[in-house]
Amino acid sequence: MTAPEPSELAYVPFVSVENMMKLVHHIGVETMLHDIADYIEADFHRWELFDKTPRVASHSEKGVIELMPTSDGEVYGFKYVNGHPSNTKEGLQTVTAFGLLAAVDTGYPVLLSEMTVLTALRTAATSAMVARHLAPKGARTMAMIGNGAQSEFQALAMKAICGIDHLRLFDSDRRATEKTVRNLEGSGMTLTACTTPELAIEGAQIITTCTADKQYATILTDNMVGAGVHINAIGGDCPGKTELHKDILNRATVFVEYPPQTRIEGEIQQMPGDFPVTELWQVINGSAPGRVSDRQITLFDGVGFATEDFSALRYVRDRLTDTGLYQNLDMVADPDDPRDLFGMLMRSKG
Image: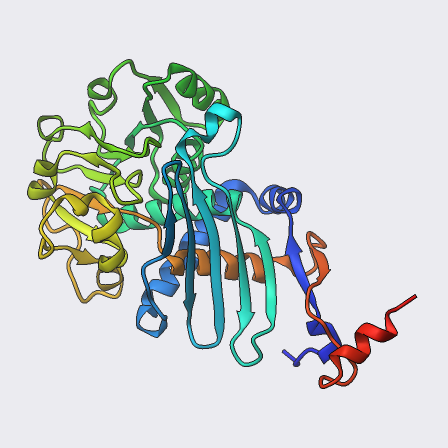
């Protein structure tokens, strides 16, 4: 690929919410979930190349605002994201986000994108990519505890990547379950709405917990979890927010993205600082075992990590070519003489 002219670098492709939705339909939801999972797995394979840091968080009584940066040495990326559970009472999203990629050699941005929709896609793709490595062989049924904005994405990713064809649903708000059933009708999955979490997990080989309340909660108790299941615990994503009783963690083999972040935000914040975990990148590159027995409980303590957003943005950038599903933003000042920024300003007058 030839290097862009300096004038071209001043214009940054921007993917709006409208164009992101068009891109998803252009590619296909399940195809895009599958492809993003492959991009995430490829970046986990080269994990050691990435700059890694826990997300930079600003907490308040209402929620959290975070920046999630990383770089592979050639491209830098970050995501801005919030988490405000009470937003739904005002008709607002719990989570909103946007993200950026920039060239390391110049510092110039090369992509700006909405990431509210894209984060839902990458979160689901990550869950299914992990389950591809850790779930019991032949798993066909998943329990989905928490049927909010993430639930349909999670279900379709597990269907596309892991072959899940039966979804058992529970939410403390039955309207959320009704919404999920309505949205997934025609997906090819058998959908069972349940009145309790205990009923939802009956016969499920994969249990996904994804609730929104910012509190220490016990969505699953120890006696609810039988041998041989894979737990996809993705709702605990900030300090003071958990979903599982700690006795489950003691029985399970726990897998995490980046321990310094997960120990602050994930289910394992309940445990001592030396609680043993396995890093996913080691499983993916074969340097650590994943599932080793039929009776093993595997638990993905997923909090979301910057490399996953980087992978999703990288995928979008690769797929934009020839789609026209972006706008060029005039984001970077580009004087003819890079030393004469003031002159450019004066020449723009009237």
